[in-house]
Length: 573
Image (cartoon, rainbow, N blue to C red):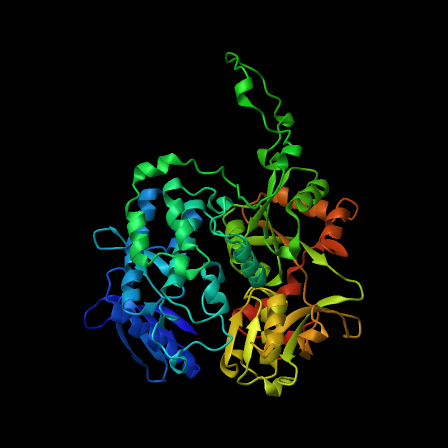
């Protein structure tokens, strides 16, 4: 919607944050910015970001001036340290909860409480001052339907932190923020959110089946925090405490309480059902069984030495919903193909996986086309191999409209669109390129856009009438006809257009992985005999050496936000 600049007030010389919106945005979006300014100004709380000014620039674009916050947000902190100590957690959360309690007393519900909206700022003395930011989708409790800025059918918020009632109904009150804080507390203590599905329909199912009273929900949560978190995550909003009551429960916790619970071992998750005990790592040595002799001078034959990098287990990162691959089967297939130890690390999103491979936390990453292009532009990865499905059917994107409402590009203006996520080629980037190629700018022409997390959710939204435009993957034959698709007649959709074939998934190496290891991995995976079980598991015709040129079209789309005329139909040569 716009950009954020660091700016300097020419009169006071104060450094500020300047939010500048793109001109020509829909009025509903402009109203949302006004709402953010007015809501934050009404609060006037030391732990809410200050709004200093608002107005319109000469070109008509709106701007918002806020205090400039120095420091990382809680999401970044948790990515860096994993989990918080009791002292640090209370230092951060108690002021934020107090700010939310004040908002509720003024009749304001934030509706998007999550770690990235809690900034860990520092005052001039260097003391931590947590700040609650982004009231752009806040809602006054007394709002009437005709004054609400929420668009019907648009999911506002972040699903993993949204209360169950918020996901299915926009009419929510203060208990929704209590739920979100409960999720944040759980993540800060364990390093994980309590519900980890990345697809919206699966997330809803998981929330409904895994009740907050379940003991496995609180694995890794210190005893003292179990009661407030259980209360905050009650599925029934009426059973959740108020923010003030939650603050009282947390304020009674001391650092001594932290010692009563031993956190789970690293990598443990209660929903994991992997049994690695059946396959012990032969390289592990129990040191307590080894007696250390006195030091003696010995001669070492250096030719017999083996690099530790060349023998240690490789860490391979995938996203939770990536092709619904089973971790044990995938690990065994990689071990067989590479003839070395491999471990599978799962991530909640491709954004997190790209960060992890760029920092060397994983050695290899399984990335779809858009995620690969973004990671390559950051210099985080180098592609080793790509998945090819070269038979008569090839992977493509279908731009879809709700039957009887949208059947051509001319019908798109003013409609509501839903996409998979902004890392999806077939579910977002390529259909946007198709629209731009026909002169339809989605950001200006569409009434609203939203991400719903999966192709199934996109099709459900079209079938229910919650959206009018969407996209899904399909496979096309040699003459361009659709030979396989995820939608049926019951979804009530019309195919507006189909893209050219899209390049396949990639396996990339961290830029920090030694060259000799990367070369060995590429050689093993392109050996058709050795890699046959892996290729079958991931549905590939073959695993081939990666060629970056095939991804140039997607790269251009990321660079300029839209494809140049004709680029949406660049063939997968």
